[in-house]
Length: 247
Length: 210
Ligand code: HEM
Ligand code: SF4
Ligand code: FES
Image (cartoon, rainbow over all chains, first blue to last red):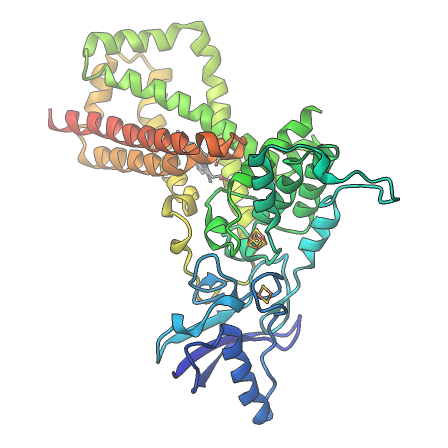
């Protein structure tokens, strides 16, 4: 199929960017979205042009590296799908597709479609872990009985891949869904309770300092999240935050 | 005070002030309904009670502060959140993922504020500064104006939309156990929003035609 692409090009962090039109032919319906961009890049390279920079790694929907705001939606039109798992059969011959980087002041553009998402790493470093001594006397985690419901909810929260689609889609560029997944994943388990109060406060402090907006519960993040992270986690985060104040 | 500096605490304060205003609106609706049923005498008695009861007199400045807090915090949060994305999307399609009401809280809120100012000038100021001989006549008389009635109805539709998102949003901000209560909260919020919009508007329209 033939497609008209409108893609954000920006030479570097401080360069002025713009949308550039590309026409591409020979796109197969079983190509993934990123393979379509690979095809475009091969054509650009063979013409001696600069290829389009975009993030990707596993290409199987598990690493959280791919991004892209496609036709006005984070990770494109499919629900519960990362960009690397989006396929061209979702589009029709002759379609015009706009491709933009995640937009948030906390995610500055590095080049073209690549943004710097290290702000999420810094939030994670502020408390997204448990402190266990691994000196050899560790207790097997499975020795502690955990209600099935909590185990399931913690597991679901832990499937967040840190892609940042929640931030990209939120009208406030809020990272609450990401942070709430990281907080809830531990808050629901006995090992995580020990540092729960400190964790939630530290992670929120860094979230605010990194320049993310505040949550207004529009729920767009939950809809666009490729892993279906639920707003329940944000309610848990809010509860944990309030509980931490009275501790 | 470091507590109130965090974004989450501001949201909690927003939620509490919003729910406080919800209580006020409920009382206000109950009083207004007496205009129609049982009628003039009951309404006059309610006005008398609101004008003299000591608890209500204490609550009046608290309510004013509640409004001022809710409005200023709402405007601040909106302004602050807007500043978090300096470069906008060329193509953005937010309606696939969130409701109109949730994205336009500031506009439905500001429209309610506009009405609130008109309402205070028309009713509350004369009530406080001069001898109003007959409240029933003052209130129902205002609905003789088609422009006033229209703004009135639109303001309460606006408030209904504001509450259709705001009610459940407030509980989410307070961290209510979502899995257990969410459906119930959304349902009661929508019902409440609908009744507020319908109740106030119906009274206005009734007196416009009678
Ligand atoms: C009687 C009138 C009003 C009632 C009952 C009311 C109620 C509420 C409620 C329950 C919320 C949800 C709080 C939350 O999301 O946690 C809310 C949010 C909000 N209100 Fe109001 N409100 C009223 C008037 C206003 C006015 C006059 C404004 C003017 C600016 C306003 C602006 C906002 C904004 C911007 C939000 C969203 C804030 C956020 O989610 O961060 N409201 N309101
Ligand atoms: S919550 Fe969802 S959208 Fe946000 S970073 Fe995690 S996986 Fe991505
Ligand atoms: S490239 Fe790994 S999730 Fe898409």
